[in-house]
Image 1 (cartoon, each protein chain N blue to C red):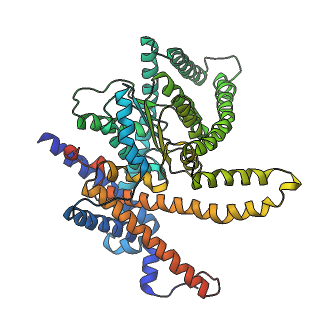
Image 2: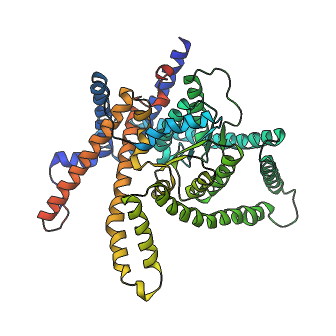
Length: 260
Length: 228
């Protein structure tokens, strides 16, 4: 049975406009509220807590850090994942005290990757041009196997000290994580794809699950804007949980039929 | 001063582009809310939105050329400096140059052997190599399951391995393991399905927040270097 309430009809027809506007408004308000309060306590994410230590160890051994966004790129539905991935890679590149190698299998990530590395270099206080070969593009193939093969070889030939793989990965992540484990290289990984996420959980040193990939900024550089994003995300999650519970309750009461 | 001006300009350009493209896409789908407010601007927004999408398509094509140049230069440099693994780099550079050369010769009808060498190389080399890598994936996955117990000897790790064993066991065509099949089906239909949906919903919510941050100029790619 369809709803006849004009307000509900309006909301249904304009959800794709109203919802992002409400989220944007919520983000603005959250930034203001977080900015007025002292540091907000974030929920524990062992992977982001372990990252600075991993980077320090790599620097102490004089080894480069391997960062990758996998198949995430600035086209289609992956665009926002690519931006979130770029933020995580920027934070890692900023905190790394040694050289960094960034790999990607999506060509649209190349300009963004260079920007990430350039900004990180500036944040670390290095002037001058970037070293050639810091960013490497490995062409995409079915399930990014070409990237997996090339990245595994790179991890060996460049004597990588730590790996951070956040972005779009499928089961091919198993090849890279296997290569990292064989060489005793620490690895943190997260993917927006379920099969890649399962492999990442099983093989990474510390797990990062689902939306935790998007929390890098809040954990590693807790500015009011970054923390507001977490507040907004948590609020939306609780609202969604409440909506699901209410709908399930209504469905149960109406004899199993989904409420209109 | 000059840097701040260019940063402002870039932010303004990015936000205008994002809003015009969004408005153009929304006008195509749900003009109810926008119809009244943007009635006079609608043709212009649609035109700008289409033009911006075309510019984006061209940018993607250019980024592929940049990618190919990046690939060739990085591996040429590695070969020249005789770094570790330079042999692989040389083979890669040679292969890429060969494929580019063959493609050009075939397009210009200068290669008259009858066989399509480019396709032959792709099918006989690329597909074969990637198939063997796909075969290796199995070992990587098994090793991953083993690492779960090595890294996380706790309740969740044990549950993960037990679930894997249960699902794999139920897939075997052995009559002794038939009682596992209904349990496997329930496991996949209820807890696995619910967990997968939970993860995807979490990612979707996070994606919406990132999108909203881009639209209000809070994303790092739109900010100046002051907070670095």
